[in-house]
Length: 125
Image (cartoon, rainbow, N blue to C red; front, top):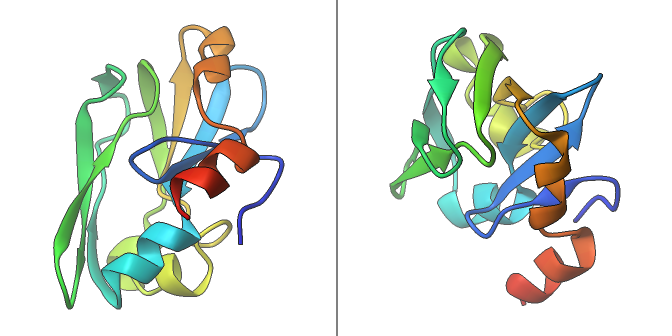
């Protein structure tokens, strides 16, 4: 399942344009499936400035631990606090209830550098 309206990173994060320069970030269905049962999610602090490619959190599963990266440069606005109590939302609903954080980007035009659904599908073949 690769929603057409989202953008993607090679590190398996999805990016949804919200309002203005605000983006919502999570990990893809492909990533959560590869990880297995998610048991812990560490998220960044709100109001943190991040650069594209920075490690901003991690997802721990019964199989492994994986870093979560900032797809673009900006400021973390909010995090999905529900994941601290219910990390399994990343598995059950990765593109909605399992979202991880919102970021306000400096340059919304930098979205063009991310993968579209077709390119991400080829990456995960």
